[in-house]
Image 1 (cartoon, rainbow, N blue to C red):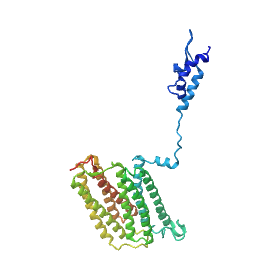
Image 2 (cartoon, rainbow, N blue to C red):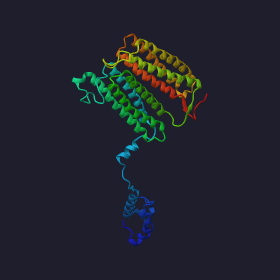
Image 3 (cartoon, rainbow, N blue to C red):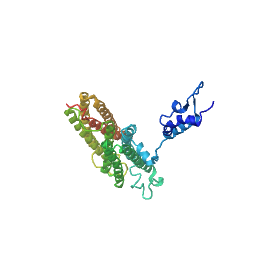
Image 4 (cartoon, one colour):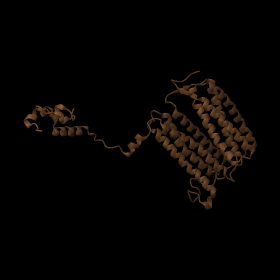
Length: 378
C-alpha cells in the first residue's frame, strides 16, 4: 500500500504537531492524527511513525515528575504511629492494665514464699553481682530477681502506650498525660521496691510499695476507660444521689485496702523469716478489716439497684455488677483464708482481687459522666 509523500502528508501532520508534542488528546485511534485520508477505492490506514511518536509523548507526559526523596526511617515510623484511637491503642491500654495487675500477683508470690530478701540489696542482687548467685541467694534469689525483671516488661508496655498516643497529643491530651504519668510512675515504683529491700522489708514500706501498685492499677483503669470515650468536656449524667453513693463507696474501698495492708503487715507473711512485723494484733485487725469491707458490699448493692435508673449508654449496670462480683469472690476468699491458716495461694489471690476491686470501682466512677452534648441531667 503506497504511502503519501512528504508534500501530501505535511498539510495533515503540521496542524497537529504541537498536540503530539504535548500529548494532549493523543490516542492511538485519533483519526485526525493517526490516519491518512484514504485514496479512492482504498480504506484509511494508520501511519506507524506518527503513532509511535504519539505513544512516546504520552508515556513521557504520564511518567511521574516528582523529584522528592523517599521518607526516612524516622518519618516512616512517625507516620506509622496512630493519629487516632485504633485497635493498637486499645490493645496497649488493656496491656497496661493487665501487666499492672499481674505485677501485684508476682510481687505477692515473692513475699509469700519468703523471697523478699532473696536479693539482699538493691539495685544489685547481692554485694558482688546484679544477678542471683545460686551459692549465695538460692532459689529465693531467683524468685526475687525474676520479679525485678518484670519491671522491664512494665517499662516496655508504658513506652509503647506513650508512643501510640504521642501523635494525638493535641486531640487527646487525656490519653497523652495519662500515658506519661504511668510511664514516669513505673520507675518510681521500682525505686520504692528497692527501698523495701534496703530497709529489710519494713512492713510500712512494704505496705507503701503495695499501695503504689494500687494507684498504678487505678490510673491504668482510667486509661482503659478513656480510650473508649469521646474527647471533650464531660458532665454528670446520673442522679446526684447515685454519684454521691458512688464516691462514698470509693472511699470505703480505699479504706478496706489500707486496712488490709495493715492486716498483712501484722500477719505471718513478712516476706522473709527475719523481717519485722508492725506489732498490731492480727486477729483484731482481721475483724477491723471486715467492717469497711461489708459496708462496701452494702453500698455496692445500692449502686447495682440504682444503676437500672441510669442511662443505658453509660453501661453502669455492667460495671456495678462487675464490682459486686469481685466483692463476692473477695469476701469468699477472705473468709476461706482466715479459716484455713492463711495459705499462700489464697492470700495471693486475695491480694490480686484487691487491685481488681480498685479497677472495677474506678470504672464505675469514670462512667458517672458523659459527653456534654449527650448528657442526661436529673
